[in-house]
Length: 265
Image 1 (cartoon, rainbow, N blue to C red):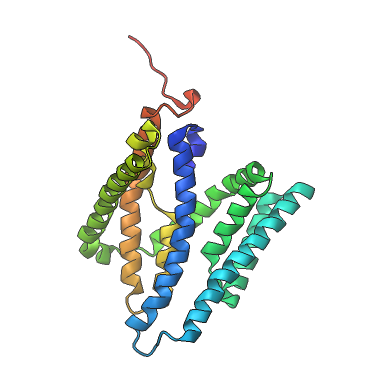
Image 2: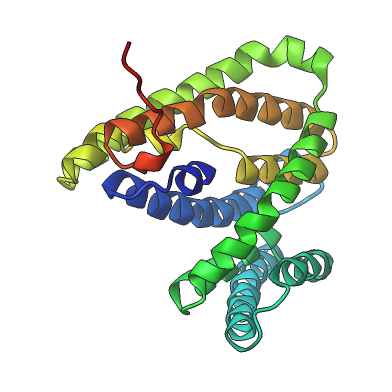
């Protein structure tokens, strides 16, 4: 939600965007793990969906939630008692836990989502935590998107761009329809009814992370999925932030200090 931090937006649309996106990321991470476990036997005939596989799935989900909760509580305690060098702590924690979680067969995305949720909602260290993450995020995003761009297969993308455009367009249409329908069903705030769909167009970090997991899980066609996913994200990211900023401006929720200065002739 870089747009929210940059514009310092406050209001129903901004609050709804933050709550929905955080919740949807957690739901998507769980749903993805379940679907991936069910899809493996269908794609690879040598695999079977057995009781052991269901147990492994439960172990992965519950273990990820447990580790994420523990990490969130430990981070909260560290920030309350010490609070120094948070960027270094987050970097070290990320590197160490990433390899540890892979060794334990836990879901890394779900673990870190739960950790951030715990710090923000069950402690008083949320603002300090967000500040540390935002200071570190620029470096992480540069490395992450550089890696994603380096893996983009241009010849393959030249063949698949119509599909990527169709997926990106379908996402926009579905986001607008479902947002307006749900807003009317729950009788939401008028501005949320009108502009609540605007933050739902962008997608990046979570989607690219899931695409990379698909590539490792299904090496036979994972490269194609990765290129299609990166292309779809690129299209969404070209229009998503602009639409979100436009919606926040029309809802009157952006900080006046970030509004363009108007001059008269």
